[in-house]
Length: 312
Image 1 (cartoon, rainbow, N blue to C red):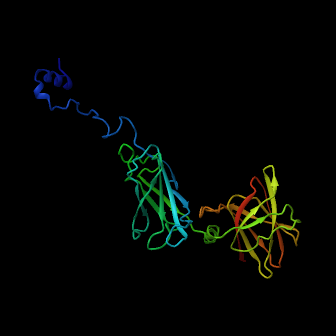
Image 2: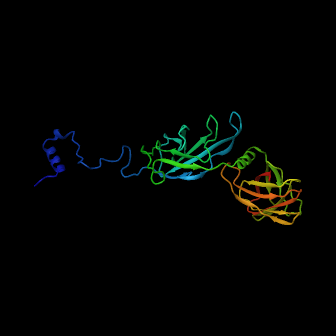
Image 3: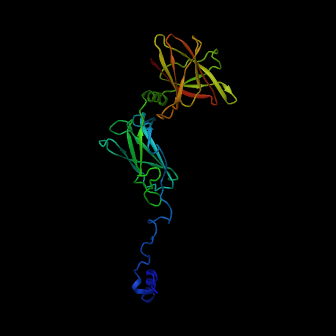
């Protein structure tokens, strides 16, 4: 009878133990175990979600914020990205590399992220470059290289299925100069307090000064609030009027001279700053026309907006 290689090895060792002290009894082709320091069968951590998402093409490239602790307090630019993993990561490894995928003349940037308390989410803040310019260029392709990160067992991340090559690819959107201008006002200006009138015949307060940050309180009770403010158009020029809200606010506009409703466009804004989420726009005709602005009904009593008026 022919003995298998494993049985033959153990039989030989039983007869001559000293000759087998340094032999490896693991048969050829057998798994000697997983990577050092890991539990057998435990998968490597992988990317479970990211902001921006892999392959996205609409990331707003900047965020405006106020830094009062800077040597020159004021409004600055940054962009914050987050990556969440399927399991805990090694918090001693937090560096990632940002590269511009289409312009090799732009040097890659090494960035250090901050881990969440459970070591599963890495927050990467991209500051404006020291030499000037925005954190990210508009309408540009980027990659955030995550391959230097290690999971809690000391292994490189498993890119599948979200970032197969270990790099988070995304493309930025076009910037909105009017929105960013309004952001500076919501970050710097002191709010002008106003209380809305319960009806448009109860002397609504004026809210028609451009570049102004208003904080408006609506009358109401039982969780329902609504009210009016007033806007007077320019005497000799038609205008586009935009209200940049800090939340979604129902708004309707009435031309009191012509006794007609004015069309209002309301939509969400790009996340350019923390104080603006929605905007409403309408056209105002020249001639010192009185427009009644009706807000609500709403579940909240107080909100803020930046008012901007531009000649058409």
